[in-house]
Length: 331
Image (cartoon, rainbow, N blue to C red):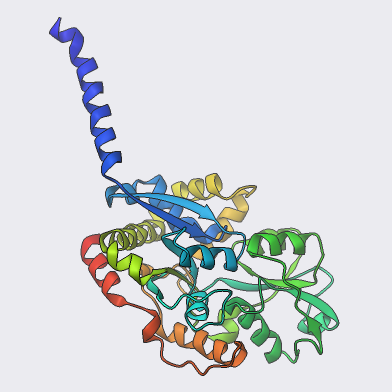
């Protein structure tokens, strides 16, 4: 009789253990832009890295920067994977709402920014008289676009116009429909575009040098009250990046990419792997922020942001203490 019940008892214990673990997980509402640059988040979910750090992470895609940042400020979301410039803008009163306690607690990437154009536009000069779409003219990635075009002899409103077309997914679709002549896309969207005959005129990092793109950001008040959750998030994200950079995991990593990146192909995933994990501009190892890259973002915001402000010191926008604590945990 006891032999008969032992398998049932084992299953029951496993179920109770799983239920107990789920009940002890701390919920984190994460908001992200859609795209392959979420690969570390997908890995952390798929490999159970968030769970091992005691987190239950719910991911929400955002249609644009305004939705993401206002939702973060209003407490609808806990953490945002967003451009460092977005946090700066909303702290400094240059966004759609005021977020004086927004800050970054980790790095993510260098932006992976590419200027992509319709097949008929093969050079910067071909953009004269055309529309080049942006998320919103108040965003840092729009500033990167303006600077790239200016360095190539094109001035906004004189040589081209900048209609707002929404977040990267919306801009990508508008470009594919040829509603606009060009836009700044984040990898791996340019991979799909090139496969369809569209052109890449240049990359942000080649034009600007060091640039801090994506970061993990939150409200300082929430982060201080939930310090362990922030530290756990950084640790899991960093472990996911380490896992991605290990060549032994490439096949499994591509499988995770294809599972999460809708309508992607094996070829696109392979190309994305090369871009997003490149030594020059791939995911920032150990989720380490690039303070020189933050300074570049500040210079661009000082140049193009409204109302005009001179911003030079990156330290108010980043608290390294969370990252330092996370690195001890991630070992």
